[in-house]
Length: 476
Image 1 (cartoon, rainbow, N blue to C red):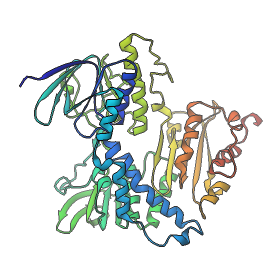
Image 2 (cartoon, rainbow, N blue to C red; image 1 turned 180 degrees about the vertical axis):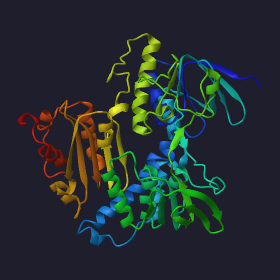
Image 3 (cartoon, helix red, strand yellow; image 1 turned 180 degrees about the horizontal axis):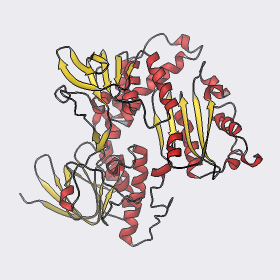
Image 4 (cartoon, helix red, strand yellow; image 1 turned 90 degrees about the vertical axis):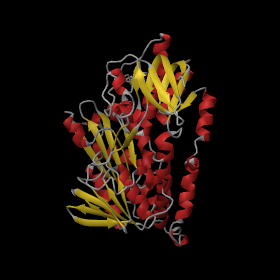
């Protein structure tokens, strides 16, 4: 059977939130665009990551808050209804149906070709459908790769044969095991430890190094303390040498001794999904990340773009969507011969990827951070001052729950008199983060921040306390 051949302006490989945003911006810029997807339209975030994981975590957080507030605590007489939590989770994934996402593509004027998309030459993508039929898509202007990332599976004897969970199985589980071992100490590992401990499972975390290596150590330690208070056993600096599936579950051999559980979740990071992408047809090495410039164009190409996790710049959905908006707009601009604004902070440059990346860890307590940590800033050669403050000492925090525990850190570039990094750890601190991100991106001088008055009594009063602890730069 001869392959169908179609010519369009832009071909996007991958219909997750990143690919969808590239396509949407390109269509709005006047380009005929087709998106290729081998799984569910909506991608990892919609069905196996951001949305279901946060749907699982929120009830755990709310129950913890209720139990810490007198008057409400007395009204909470039972544990979580886990079945109800899972049903609500299912509603956020649309029961793993992408009908709604497909309808959105149609309404946005984006074409969809289902199947495995691979590069097959310059500006060409060959799509193989489930029935074996092929469609060749030829791009007049560009191809954008937005295939995301896949979980790493460490080279541990017996692990593959033990059929471990990845994040997909953890977020889509229909039953909660009595016990769960988690290999890894990053965001996914600790968020799932939080969720499953909240569901009543016995949880053990096995980390090769420390915990939450991307955030300030004090924040990671507070999360660890909280998890331990919930009964989670944490083994740091612990090597795993073997995993076996037994009749009763799994047995994990570690340097801390053998650990048994009903299931084992492997959460040891992710790698760009480029192994089966046909990169070799255009002179690139399969399995590697696709390095780009700040307009998301792959180094050495004028027609190939890589957006989101696949380029390895920042593996966060919101940052991938940010990149997608820049990429879709610049592809349309270049195709039409319009000016390209690729200077730092320009409309077509993903400048925030470098120094203004916000991230939230939805554990209990939450960790919310943007910009470099103190150690990272020093390694960059910056002259900094670190300001710490007890978040629990802010009046608004104490009103949200009794015994509020939290901390805040502000990092100031002393040469420029601007804030470059902030970390919060505590209940519900995620909602504090965008104000910090805005101040950092806008490079707002500390003198001016004094005039951004936080309302009282709210947790946002932490900004006043941090500035007071720093002191007015003009009075020095």
